[in-house]
Image (cartoon, rainbow, N blue to C red; front, top):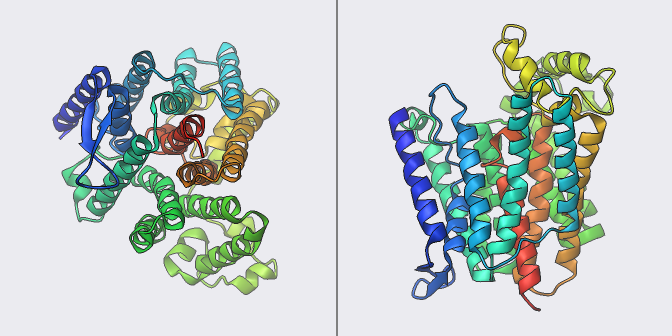
Length: 429
């Protein structure tokens, strides 16, 4: 099956390259099946790459092939910027991102391994490049909407395949891990909610919303539940501003209730089966009751070794990966920290964590301002999706390797943000 993944990877790469340098394509319109949509070569490449982030095509040749695919996509995006007539838009939140990347480069100077530092840097560089490419290539709402609905259709197909028994045996490594897959569904859920607000197909989009929201509960993936709830709360605030506070409170109460009401979730979350909400309100549930699946020990070990006494600057970009890869027995074979926030602190200190968190919050604020600064619902759809998605997806960095899955996770909210910037620049109310 690995041979098939190599074949898929090569075919998709060739298709992307050919479409990128082509004069353009004619596609079915996303609004009317009888109409046609003309797109440029770079736009066609964008539609393909934006909708295929769920495909890992992983294979073992003694190299990190996901890193190779990431590097190929970055090269194609860079090449695409030469072929497109539009210019990338460097918004003020993206300028903060650039400062963060510069800090990662500084961290590579005092890092224990340049190689691991470079790998970490590229994983953070990709979302920025992806976003800037989108801001340059999107010329109108039709092209952006076509990319979004195509990505949603692919996500739905992957969702259906994932619930077919033995699907991961039939397609090993073709699709990203379940954790990455369900994080990918967060932006798709928020896009569907946006269409509930701004289109006539409300029931259809409501079904899409439920389809992308329920898997995190069905599979009892706590991190994805956290990200989904964070996205819903963020989207509520964008949509209703201060009036959203009751909705946000209701989401918090419902989340806590579900945590104790669903046996599968409660048993996975806590040690002991007799815990209840009343015990929580009485303060009888402590951190010792929470099942972190080895994470608490892992985080403490990494922080004691790499963060302690280096709180501001950390031990250098890639220090966590260098330590875990070179000490497999100490970490029971694990090679990732299962928390991007912990890795940021250990690698680049509080400075790195604050810069990344500030950039994320800045994108949310910018999307909020774009949403309320226009009456054009075309722009509002994308501003809502980008702003809510970025906080939802980044929230999963608390206890997952979201950055490692950049193609499937961070690419979507940054892609939506890039399209938001393009539409704001090129559309008039």
